[in-house]
Length: 198
Image 1 (tube, rainbow, N blue to C red):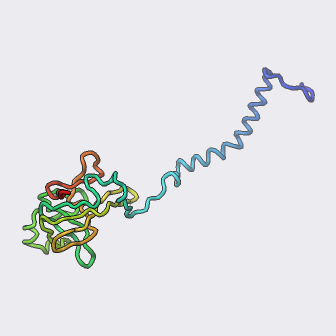
Image 2: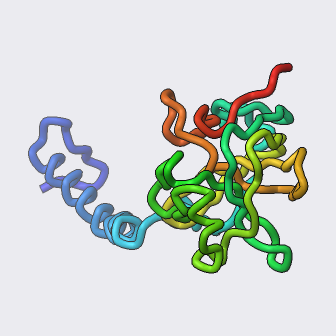
Image 3: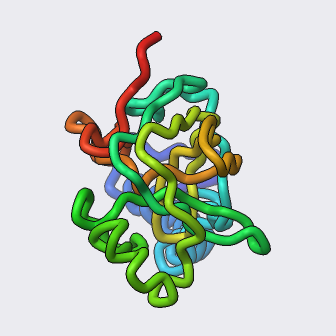
C-alpha cells in the first residue's frame, strides 16, 4: 500500500495497470467522436469530395488541348454534300454526313445513306432542313464540353462560311472522326471534310 506522495516505479506492474486504465477511459470518450463521423463518411459519401455536377455546356475554346485535329478559326471544305439538321424556327443545329460516308456513332442521328435517298422522299426525314453542297466552307468557331452527372462529350462548332445557307454555331461532330491518339477528341474525317490551304 502506497502512502501519499509515493511514486510508482516505471517497472512497477501497477504502473502499467494505471496507464491502461487511463487510456481505456480516454478511448471510451473519444471513440464515438471518431467512429461516427468516419461511418457517415463511408456510408453517406463525401459531398465535398465529389460535388454535384450540373448538366450543361462548358466552353473549352481557349483550351488548345481539346482541339484535336481541328484549329480554331481555320476553314475546312466539304468533300461531299451533307445534311443541315434543324429548321429556321427552332434553329439549325448540326451538319451530318450521309450514313454511307460515315457510320453514325451510338446516340447520333441516323441520316439517309445518300443525298439522292433524301431527295426521293424528304418527308421521311423531317429533321433535315437542307442539303449543303460539296465545296462549301466551314470555319471552326469554338469547342464545348457537354457535362451530365454521368458523363461528358466534347463537341466542335463552326460557321458555314460559303454557299446559299450560312448558319452560325453549327455542330460538326457529324463530319468528324475520333483522333487516333485520344478517343475523346475529334478531327476532320478526310472522306467528308478537308483543311483549306493557308
